[in-house]
Amino acid sequence: MNEALATLLDLLDLEQIEENIFRGTSRSALVPRVFGGQVAAQAMVAAGRTVPEDRTAHSLHSYFLRAGDPGAPIVYAVDRIRDGRSFTTRRVVAVQHGQPIFHLSASFQTYEEGLDHQSAMPDAPDPETLPTAAEALPAYREIFRDPGTVERLIEARGAVDLRYATVPPWGSVGRPVEPRSQVWFRTAGKLESDDALLHTCLATYVSDMTLLDSVLLAHGRGGWAVGDVVGASLDHAMWFHRPFRADEWLLYDQESPSAAGRGLGQARIWTQDGRLAVTVIQEGVVRVPRA
Image (cartoon, rainbow, N blue to C red):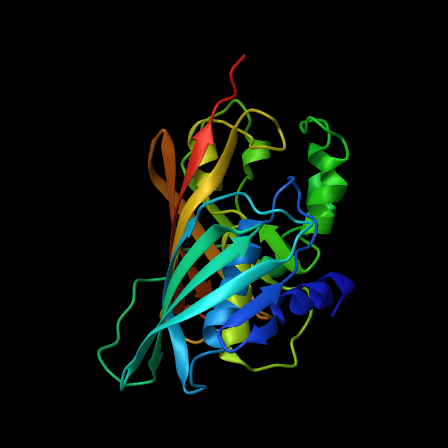
């Protein structure tokens, strides 16, 4: 386990300050606001810590309300909406400077057997044959508006081994391509914990990194680092279908069915042996800067 992953695990280990109130800190982000995946993951930690251990997350629905301040702590207030015989529902509001910045509703369920089917896993190259971020990103240094972006991107993704199986947005600037993107990811080191909540929260963290890539690809845009778009996530939803480990390879298969001022990304996360683990949908504002 490297230092970046250890730092991320510390960020997810929230401080409990009251029965239903938790406090978290932030790490520096690529932009001057808290990374959305971090807030979503921390909110899931807060929700999960108020739920019986025999119940695992099956879905989350969330809204990004305000940009978070990375220099201030975030307080997570949990509302215990319902504790049923099979399902538990929690609502979490993340607050900074007296204002809500993020809202999440999550549902947890005890395990039960039932009908079981899934779509076929899409084709993708072996992740071990793909370059790491540190190997791939320097080739795009001249495309980014700031040469230091390469090092910041590598540092920001230090806790996660994320490898593009398809061309990244900054690799097809000015050339619209199919609005589909694939990345493989896993944590940058094995995890000692088998806690399903931790692995769920880590996947939640990563799920906000690349989901809107497919929106950019459809229009030949390189993204914020290139400077040809600005934007932010609006909402984020996930459904957890089958068990998985975040320290084992997961294929994040993403596409954009629509963009109309707001861009929509939808995706599925597969285990390397072909089990559909998670479905993800996110909408974001993607704007072309004015001249």
